[in-house]
Amino acid sequence: MKKIDRKQLANALADNVTKQNESYISDFYYAVQISICLLKPIGAWPLGDNDTSRLKVALHKLSMTIVTFLLIFTIVPWIVQIIKEKWSVFLILREMCGILFTTSIFARYILLLWHQDRLKSCIDRVVDDWRCAIIVEDRDIMLMNAKVGRTFGIVSVTFMFSCGALFYTLPMVLPNAINEDNVTVRLHPSPCEFFVFDSKASPAYEIVYFLQLLSGYTAYSAFCGICSLMAHFVTHVCGQCDMLAAIFEETVDGGKHNDGSIENRIATAVTRHLRLLRLVSDVSNLFTEICLVEFINASCNICLLGYYIITDLNNNESFIQIFMYVFGLASIIFNVFMFCYIGDLLKERCQKVGTTCYTIEWYRMPPKKAIELIMPIVMSRYPATLTAGKMMTMTLTTFSDIIKTSMAYFNLLREFSSRDAMRT
Image 1 (cartoon, rainbow, N blue to C red):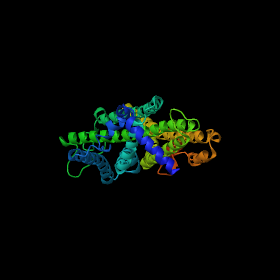
Image 2 (tube, rainbow, N blue to C red):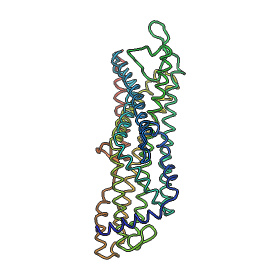
Image 3 (spheres, helix red, strand yellow):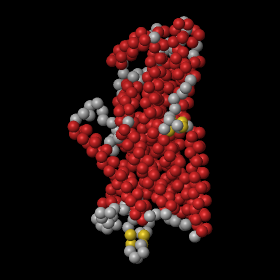
Image 4 (cartoon, helix red, strand yellow):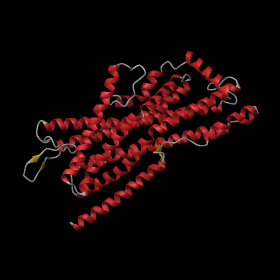
């Protein structure tokens, strides 16, 4: 078997020298365009092999430093204000959604930076897949799956940035608050309590507002960029599963996807299968912690946003504010649905490879050759999945569990709120 693998790999290397998809660069950019546009400015897109100059490396590190500062600039004042003003439980709940959302984005951003080497390895493998897509049908399959990933990215950007635009323009639309001394207090999008200066006086007010706008743009770019990146990787793997199924189907009689002698056809199927399994493993390990953070964030924020909507409706709050909460709720539900849907899609396509692998007409092959397909058949019986912290699989069943958990927390919050209102 090792001899066959070496021979097949040598043939594949020779083919790659003379045959490749001439438009693979533009195809790859089409697939990851949204992720590049969102992640590269914030330093989360890894540098290429040619980007080794000191200036590019310095700018890359400077981008990561600025983004880290902006996200901390939003999180820390929130915590300072909670401690300084000794907020009650219900006041903390009113602000918990924003601080939890920003903290979860910061955690995902740090995790993506932590796995930069693995991310770069996955990107290189995806580029190689586009380069080797020399059959028209294979390229069409990859472009179709890339379009699905782009669609998820576009919808995520539309939801998140629209909600963010409402959030950061709300202080300009709503009337300013008046404190106990009958002094008008200008509002910021998020709390901005500082010990060294007064953020409500000009020009500190304008500077802090501008920094919060930059922080919001950074947070939404990181959020949507990571979602789009994961959608691209998973849909790309789904396309590779379809192509691998075609290779297994042609193992017996050969075809344009898998030709040559019986030894070469078996070696091609086995090596392509192992290569796909390595890619799936790297993608799953790259996003497992990120999926766990998204699971926690979605479970809590769906509950909190539902609580805000009901409370504000009862208190006759501004329609714009209520609409912002509804839009944010729809955005979070869509994004967690996307995580679960593409996880379910990955599981389904991997199961399809397994079904194809052990339903081919292997009995028409020489017995000594057919036995070499036992290992791929056994491995295909355990389809790859996306997991949240390697504790739960991201499927549509998990999505329904998240909604049920959030509704349970929501009912608990509503009960506590109604009891507190009766006491007062």
